[in-house]
Amino acid sequence: MNPGWVEATRVSLTGDRDSNQDRCLLLSNEGSTLVVVADGLGGHPRGEIAAQLLVDVCESLFRQASKPLRDPEQFMSQCVHKAHKAIIAFGKRQMPPVNPRTTAVIAVMQAGSIYWAHVGDSRLYLVREGKVQARTLDHSRIRSIRPDRGSASRMRPSITRCLGGLEQPPEITVAPPTELCPGDTVLLCSDGLWAQVPQNKLVQTLSASSNLDCAVRSLAKYAVQRGHPHSDNVTAVGVCWHTHEQTTQAMGGPGGRLNNPSETALRQRNNGVQPREH
Image (tube, rainbow, N blue to C red; front, side, top):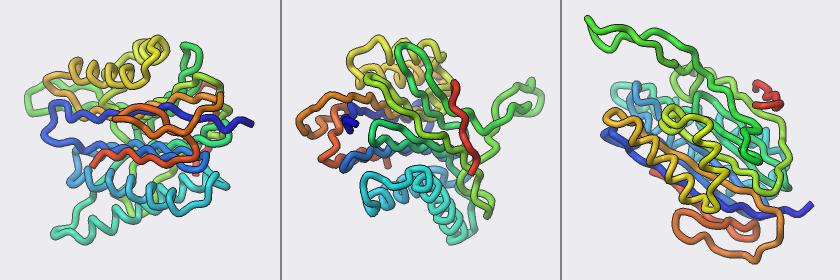
């Protein structure tokens, strides 16, 4: 099978928040590409540290592993479990102790297939021929929230799984490998994007544009504008899969090509697919 190459880009915007607690990672080496998005939970202290620890663990394990990855599903589970332990240990070292938390969505692309896993409500979309071929299902439930006394309550999603918080590692949803088709676009994003961008607009924007970088940035900016003046952090990593041979090129700027023989790192300090719980 042609190992192919990926065109990739990423964007992370602070929105109307005081700081950006999202983190993302994009690495490609020897035929394997790793993509990670983490959204540090703002309702808990040091969410940005939790998100950064996940990214650091994923990068470290990916660099150490032989390529192509022998068992991508086990690799992703290992990343989550090791990051969870690191987050718990960090929280205990603080005075007073704290409980940082983060979501996680991880994808591995190699040998013409994609594997993914997630915890929380950061999402992965696989877009093919103008349709959502697969999407992660959020680990969340709807509950009533009253911002302050005297105000009307409103319904909003609440995360049911995350890294950090409890000593016991979170249950991870891992999807089975999915064969990629030429032109498939994969988008990993935080809820700051998907909560503001209707799915039909997301799919249309990714499918209609011949410039992946412009498409992903357009979606991120739209999310910030639509959420103003209360926009969340908005982070997205887009990857388009190609199968014809290309000469090795280094990635130029925030978007471009990631070819299998080279390594590039970018960091920021289901329809018919039945996932499994780990």
